[in-house]
Length: 539
Image (cartoon, rainbow, N blue to C red; front, side):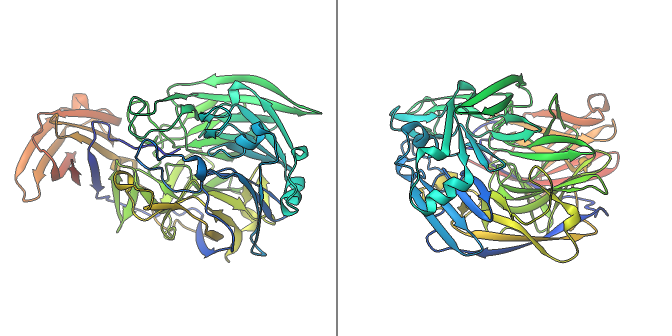
């Protein structure tokens, strides 16, 4: 679920423009993207739904028919906007079929009407867990404690015939499944339910102590289990991994990964950091036995759950993951990287690459999403494409000509990057457009990665006259920081002794900085290298 992204030091609107020096093009393989929109009569807009496929047709389950939730305490996650139907979509024939869930047992009916479920397709079964919505049985909004297995071929047939019955569904109840906003995937025969949170009560963007209250508890966990299907579902839990430092994540992207002969998962970004209401900027690599935070890599873009496409090149043993739009703390405008701590909707498409040596890099592609959209959408693979494994596209099937690989459907379409403070429910919507996606191989990055030494972030708070900053440096040397107004008048200057500057990531606090609200220029100098930033914020 979306939540207001707040600044680390108060309710201020902060935009920092980073003038990036030394953008350079890497010479490894990447992909060029072509996006073609089309619509199907009768297909409604949905976001945060679950989906499974069979023989080129999709089964859409749950989700919401609105855009970004409104700010008013009683206007978010309205019962009448949850999806209480099963939808079957045939994108090639341009057809859609719809059938009500009302004939199913109440627990199945309510569960499959929720949004932000964790889901995974295993063969002909769609596995759905958790999710959040209003429950008539509980007379409140809850996170559901269920795992439901849907027989895809039979359910698709039943929806087309408008004869949906309980025979195509199996369900089990367990508190470990009471999770929303996490992600579900599989390594071998073991399911991994990663991250997310338990959210009980009516969501209120003004806070748990304002108006209708709620309870929110992050899992901080990877919950591993196996499913044994007989007459009834049997679940064997294999224990959990608890990590409050790196696994406090929800609404992120969990991507299947191949490293040599090993199958892993990668948890990219998500919210919220332990120390700030801001996205995580590094991923976590997960195997069947361990997990490792990749803190030496900074992911600047695509921080909220969005459509994504993993691609594996066996010959080079490298992984590419393309991310399509969504919400992010950074975006590129006229070759300038902008840091916006209000974390806006973006149209950025990026490629995060893992090389054969294990290095992670991030590149911004020249193609953009056709609007501020992608959050809460899903990439639905074309059934005919060759896969390397577990939903991962095989790069050997991609050549120099564009090849259709799948579709993006639904998600939130926003009219502006930042709409939270003015959101009346009309500034965004759940998109009903389908985007056909084709890719082709190119021999170099379309645009460049951001060097580590340009990773500078500021978190000013004019009311307390403090400026917090973080930066990466490859040397230990004196650091000079100057702040001036737009007319060039010096406001603050400070030299930080090299004894306080370490190689790697540094964090500093500048005190008694009398800048107030407005726009200012920051200049950093270390060993003769000058980095300039324009920083602006308003009440």
